[in-house]
Image (tube, rainbow, N blue to C red):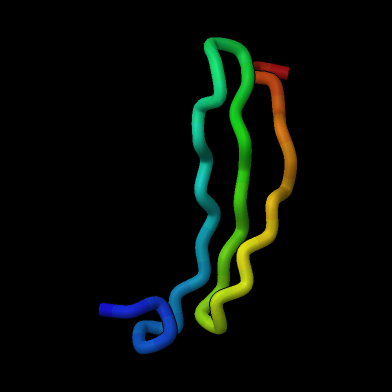
Length: 42
């Protein structure tokens, strides 16, 4: 099912290295916004 059909919004977290992760927000219309890099546990 496509994001648009399901009206899905989401947050994707991806590990960059052992102490950092990146976060991305997406919505059904196809917008993807990088929320930045964050340190684990801080």
